Length: 250
Image (cartoon, rainbow, N blue to C red; front, side, top):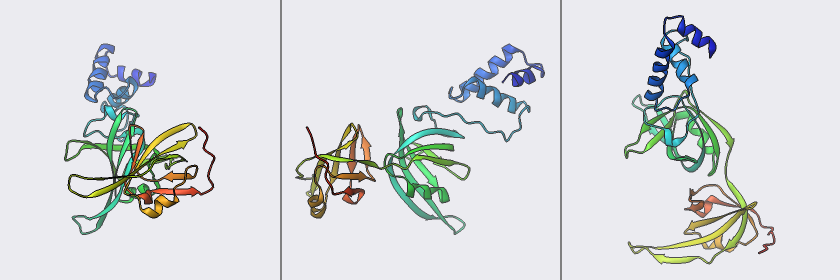
């Protein structure tokens, strides 16, 4: 950093002028960068650093705005919508994967393009990842989207999946929706070490219900986490790991 300061001052830029440039650059980027990153960007503009130098600093979801580049952030996968194919204008096939990611400050939509989309096959609910060199866009509905393109990368810290003991199983309930359709809902508590979470499963099959026993080990591989509760739409998203039950103590 001292070398950069010295090189910039050799161009005849005073300390006061440099402070102003740093403030202007930081303000332009929504104060998402620190002084050192701002200084490096200024040095690049002045030709002291090569134009292809890239800079990224880890940010939080709440600080993101549309049309940002080189975004780096650590997040958890909250929902995996899978991958779809589409026809490109040149006639070739493309792929796009979608999901919802979150950190302690908020949530955002994740959009992963072409060969990079394959990584979604490895990720389960709760996966912890680091996103690097992503870019942001505004979705059709005005929501924030984080895009993974050709130059972007996803580093997997933990592939996810919520494993634990089926600690408490409640009787299923049935009710009629406003459209006249009947739905079934079952609730149970899953315990991961010392942490307990409530799980809601929609329309479980009778066969699946027969196999559920308090004390068995299970894994939730797909679902939606909201306020520490887990919502699962299909019983195929819950895997029974062990039928050997663990004694439940109250």
